[in-house]
Length: 320
Image (cartoon, rainbow, N blue to C red; front, side, top):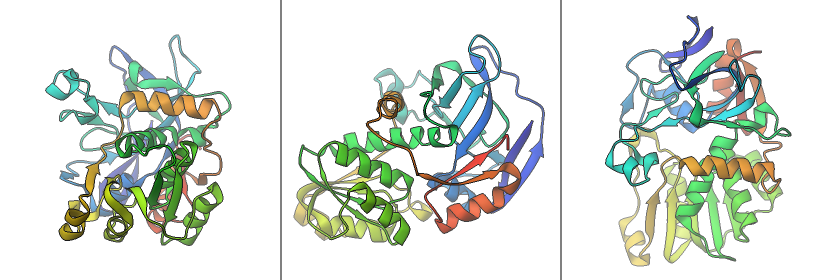
């Protein structure tokens, strides 16, 4: 099979290697589309993300759509849940498996991800894709699950005012979810076409005070603005990943308003199932979010688009 490996910061190489041999309980998947996200950008630019540092060539990619290659489910179109919790630690035992300290996550640390032509993955973490959702769009089901988890942490009341700071793919999904819940939504992004995408969905661009703010950018500017916009006793949900593994904020502003700062960690297993149901029922649309598609051999251009924040979502199609 062919795989795209990250050897160091900005050092991507297509590598030929043996096909994976699925373990008991795993399915062999033919990968059709992989979405690139902010965590992939961190790996690509820094060779690290947070305290996880590249220790060997790594296959990135965790927003994976594929087709089951063989067995009873052969030919089924699926989306991958990229997190493999241990199932034994204290967090897993009490149902917080998304906080498992021993989790193996696709395209992270020493666990290869989906930027390859074939992938072996546990069958319980492989879920059917609705028939009318194209492969490219189905890569957005995983970030929709992440957005659902962040929304649950923010817990906006019906009719609440909410801000989404950062209108990349995750931010635009949060805008949709908030509007669907009946919230008034303020959107902000320094990239003009991304802000335009948010306002086209129904978000406002003129500032107003909010009850809850979602930092979907991971930048100092976004957090500063969230602190300024959020009303006393409001909530700020930190969804974006900051550069350099550091987040800073004005303690006096947060203290005087008694603001709650909540950190969002990926998603729970049920969030992906909720995402599939929302899209399958037509309540949330993924249409128009994928704006660029590249083959493995054009990965440098795909990651350049990701870094420059061109378009909205960039997808790599390993079979192309």
